[in-house]
Length: 86
Image (tube, rainbow, N blue to C red):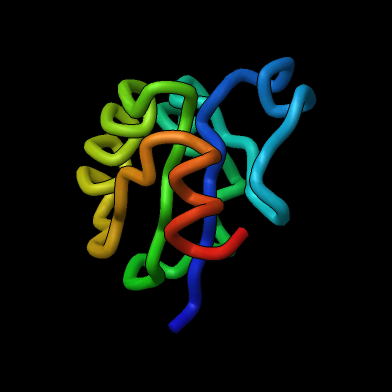
């Protein structure tokens, strides 16, 4: 299965440390229909995370409204690293 990890924190937060290979797409970019999503198939597993799980939950709703069907709120980078081995 193809898996994408998206860090929905702001670029400054992402720069301070992130999950390996995670894309950085804040909610404001998701809402504007960023081109960064064009490489992500609608049926791919998409794991989102932020600092507390709040922004990733909002982002999950945004992606689901765009037709993504396998979106997971990974809460934060430590949870994603522990659960998915990143």
